[in-house]
Amino acid sequence: MPTSTFAAFAQRADYSLLESLQVDPQATDDGRDHRPRQVLSGHYVPVTPTPLPAPEYVAHSSTLFHELGLSDGLAHDEQFRRLFSGDIGVAQEPMRPFGWATGYALSIYGTEYIQQCPFGTGNGYGDGRAISVFEGVFNGKRWELQLKGGGPTPYCRGADGRAVLRSSVREFLAQEFMHALGVPTSRSLTLYMSREETVRRPWYLPDSRSFDPDVMVDNPAAITTRVAPSFLRVGQLELFARRARSQAHPQALNELRLIVQHLIERNYRPEIDPSLDFADQVVELAGLFRGRLTALVAHWIRVGYCQGNFNSDNCAAGGYTLDYGPFGFCELFDPRFQPWTGGGEHFCFFNQPAAAEANYQMFWAAIRLLLEGNSEALAKVDAIRDGFAGAMQQEIEAMWARKLGLANPDADLVQELLQLMAHSRADYTILFRRLSALAADPGAGLPEQLATLSESFYMPSSEELEARWIQWLQRWRDQLSASGDPRDTAAAMQRVNPAITWREWLVAPAYEQAALGDTSLVQELQQVLSHPYDEPSPDIAAKYDRLKPREFFSAGGVSHYSCSS
Image (cartoon, rainbow, N blue to C red):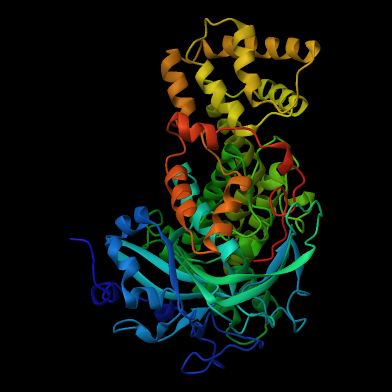
């Protein structure tokens, strides 16, 4: 029977992080620790979230509720709503009466930074508004539940610790959409808002064409609860490695060892034999994380996702998508697609493999400290690190082959296609979905097939460009002949090329209406985005399977946006 009461939910509590890792020795006993300060040691800081006043229900994920064995009715239970809108005073034993926040380090493309820390030391950078409030076991799986926008922590760097409804709706919908796409990701549990507390942030005027925000706006405060096997980040390992290298305190190396052990327990234990020597477990961890990270980035490119800000602190050490802040999905194909105004080309769509490799470099450098004196283990992890680029290339090539229905990768065929897509200004999702349909009928005329493909073009084709497309289609069809039954090939392509994608101009009205108390569009998007590979009905296709209207190109808050969340 599904868990239907808050008391029964509380019995799921099981705090492996709090029990196996070390608390900041300067922390308060009651978790009332909300002012920026340096955290010099320890893995976590106990902290109480700040409740939203008069919280209102916006949405919950029925899919995740059912996976956790929870009744949908719990989302409307008063105590459940209070907890996940920031009021941890409702906690019942064995729950803890406080949450926890963690510190981490920042590196960008392998360069260490401390400027973002208000103290200039790196000891004040971490979970500024993300507060975990529950860890438990549901249906045999361990999950951590974390409030995004739960108020200030010692890492808030002077900010208010809140999240606006706009970014909360985006994160809530995006996490469940990515799960439906088959991309490893953190998940969404609930979303509550308050119209009695507003948050002031820079944003865009209606019809703005400004690159940077041009107005300050008040938006309802909101808390979305995100869920993951853990929220351990590469940046956390990096923080403890920095302290170990500098011998910041006597327990620094041991704290690094403890958090790596905890990472293995939380995210890799089924694959790593606990009877192995610890050094051998670390070597296994290096290989497994490389495999997960390279596969993850291949998934991102497959579905058109751009993380936007893939620093080490936004890189989950468990190998899944984390921290939906300045993300976006590519519509008009552009290898340099980057929706975040603060991101720069280094974090653009096709640079994500390079960013991942830089993050892996920081991961490798951190765990390597635990192997000093063990030349055999060091050689193994070094070899794993040296093989990252090759492993990534293999994942990317296999991904393109699946998108095109090929029996074997063909880099030349892919490269020519990408060039044609750029010349025709093709819509990334629509083009590959139309190709999936064409694969079922290899005997159709090439001009007719091109006419179908042209439904994805934002720019009319010239005769020369059409001729190049015809030649490419012929080469592709020749390759498909080696892939078996055309109907099976088309079906396989449709399982990796979604029919529906995230289109910011269709999402923006949902959070704008939700701010006025109308959540119907949020619920509609939940439903539409939960089955992205299904062939949409004519009504759904007319709204969601279409090219981006001209007025939304270069529109502030839609085609690009700041990280004002």
